[in-house]
Structures are given as structure tokens and as C-alpha cells.
Length: 223
Image (cartoon, rainbow, N blue to C red; front, side, top):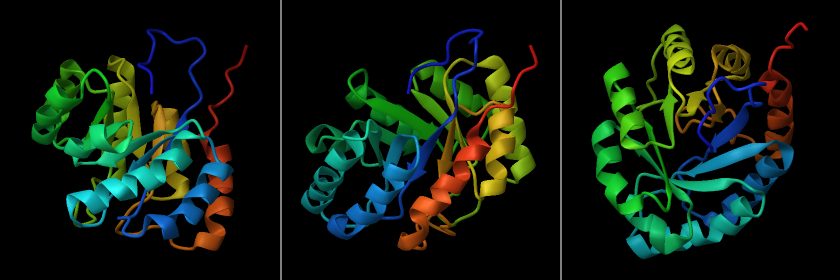
């Protein structure tokens, strides 16, 4: 997930960033995940882990990592930065500036560290200045609440106009994807533990993501 070049010409095509539900049984989740990765251009998978002892969580990550990485996507762990080095993951996604800052020393520069749950512009700028590989806007919190969509659009537009660090924007529905792309998001995050329209029906995952693809396309620029 490379840093946005200055004045990119043309702008890179936005890609998907998939967020999993909390995974307990890695074997059972492998099938739906394979369908998702086979149906769309996925840059990264954020693996959220169900509560368990440390060894069980490491084993889950090791079971998932090859399937993700063999498709050219990065595997990021939701929180649990202490598990990254021992599990074969590519990095961690941290929620909130404090947890992000605490993870930096252990993970940089060898692993990806992204930051979401950013309460304000100052925290977003602080994360970027500290070396975040990306910032995320609009994702639901642990209770399923998220900012209003207009607020997310405003934040993504501001970021894209001012900063080079990549921006991941969370889309709660297919209809939100195109406006976020137009606002300047580099990656579109899909998948919510609260209302999961991506993973809800394993038999429809491929069709759901295929239907999202046209909404990721950049608008044509007149010559």
C-alpha cells in the first residue's frame, strides 16, 4: 500500500480493503475468504480475531495468511500488534492514535501499520507524521456506530487534497463506494461486524464484490 506520489498522473485506480468479521474458526472462514479474493482486486485483508488465547489466535493467523498473500494482498491484524512478528502477517491495523503510537516502535519499519478510529483532524495528521502507512476514515466503532456519511466524505476530500499518505475510506453500502472514490480515497474498506452485507451470505460473496467493481472506477477525464 504505497504512499501516494505527489501530483499523480494519472491517479491510481482505487482498490478494495476487506475487513473480516471476528474469526473464530479459520478453516470454516477459508472458503468465504477465497471467494472474496477471487472475485475482486483486493489490496489488503484486515483480519479481526475472536477472543481466544494467544496461541489460538496465532494459529488462526497462520491458517489465513497463505490464502491472502498468495493473491498478492497484505494480511493485517486488527489490533494485537504483538502477534504480527510471530504469525506471518504483514502488519497491523490499530484503532486510535494512542494504540497506533504504541505499536510503531515494535513494528516499523518491517511491517505495515495503519491507523483508524481517528477522532479528529489533529489525530489523523499526527498518525501520518509518525509514519502511518495509511489512515482510515468512516469505519464503525466497537458498538457499530460510525460518523455520518457527509462527515466521512468531507474528511476524505480534505485528506486527498492535502496529504500524500494513502487514505482508506469505509463504505457501509455499495452506493457509498463511488462518492468516496470521487472524493479521493485510495482504498475502499468493506465489511462491518455490525451490519455485514459482504460476509452475511457466503454463497453471494463473489457476486456482491463483482457488483462493487464498477463503482471503484475513476471518472473519465476529458482530453
